[in-house]
Image (cartoon, rainbow over all chains, first blue to last red; front, side, top):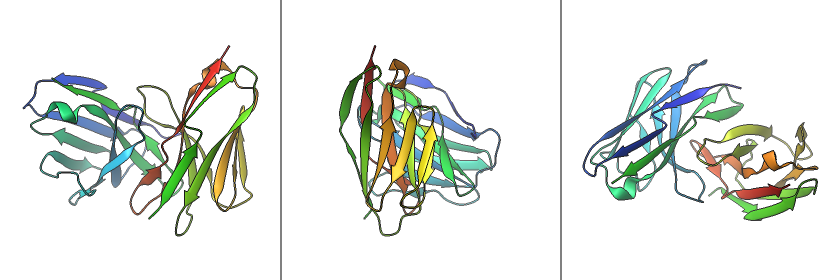
Length: 114
Length: 108
């Protein structure tokens, strides 16, 4: 199947700092990528849709000024958590669709804000 | 609004003990139903896509089936390495809408 990578795989930061997470499609191009958040023992919740060449689309309740998304190229989307707080600690996962068949997910990034 | 409900929430099996996981869905128009496997601390791994009632797909010890209202993931003679959370999902307005998952534990 298609490969999607994320970097870093885990990050620990101090409250108030910003953290950038990268999502790359390694062997295909993706004009759209999706960012999900997953809390322990819960399912994935869509945060936003990253669109190459245009603004991201955010789900209701997700602050666009806090979670900055940039779809820099057809293979790269970044999520920046600005002024992170402990409640932002979570598992962040990106995905990219390949054709119309399915979405492939990255390995996830675990964020811990102290 | 699309809804996906999975049951049971957790399932513990002995090695070799076959069972089934359920995924019930309510959508305005089904454009596919997806099954994923997720190991702790990792992203979901794609397993199957089903598109129409009556369709079945198999992969090793797993078989997914689909009706007009639900999908089943049958696990035949499971092994400890099949322990994971199994997620089903349907395409939403933009991305996938996931069920809450079934945490499967297979004991040797």
